[in-house]
Image 1 (cartoon, one colour):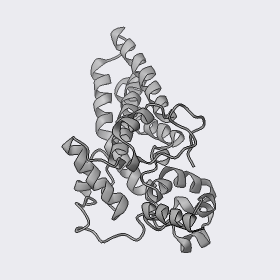
Image 2: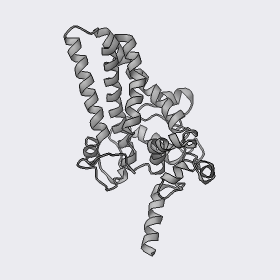
Image 3: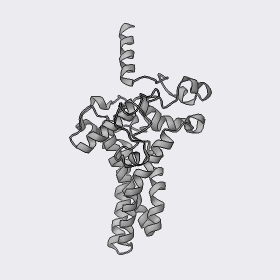
Image 4: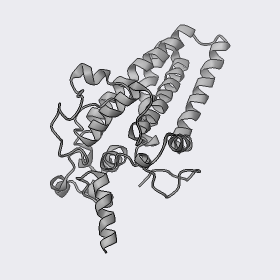
Length: 268
């Protein structure tokens, strides 16, 4: 299920799968998704306030620039840590309070990696996380204007992150070499072994701490790449995610699951 609270243009009750979409269709969908619309609004409002305060001389230019540069550095660190230790954690499914959030923000994406409706991060988790990760540093460097500058920068980075992430799941070879490389490593994360290549737009931290791998020859095939370890044995003790997931358990390649379901429907 999608967390879209209302439907805008492209976003309807129909399913959209990136392996069957082109770049133009993705771009149209991207700019109509409610979370992206909200992010752009935050960037415009917060950025507008910062620019007006700088022009009026009420904000320190070095402080604001420092907040922006600090955010650019901090962002990939924070998202590496979140992806590795929160999204791929094995504690969120244990509580009724956190199981639904974990299912929405990452389990659904790994169980069906090309489903556009569950690829985007949830607005109610992403925006507060970006604010908490960036605004304190911005405030320390330039007060509330620095905090707003940091927030606008972090949210703008989120927009880029989400778009590149979508491109990595499209069924085509990107023209830019660095995006092609990122796509290759990200597809390995989704279809070979999820315990590595946590970066989406930046693999610096993977390389630095040893979680980077090139491809199938470097790591064994993971049995949990599509369910992140939440299997039938786990569900006996912690059933919350299973009860919320249609067609559970998801232990096989989603493309194969869909083929099997279609074949069964034809046979029936």
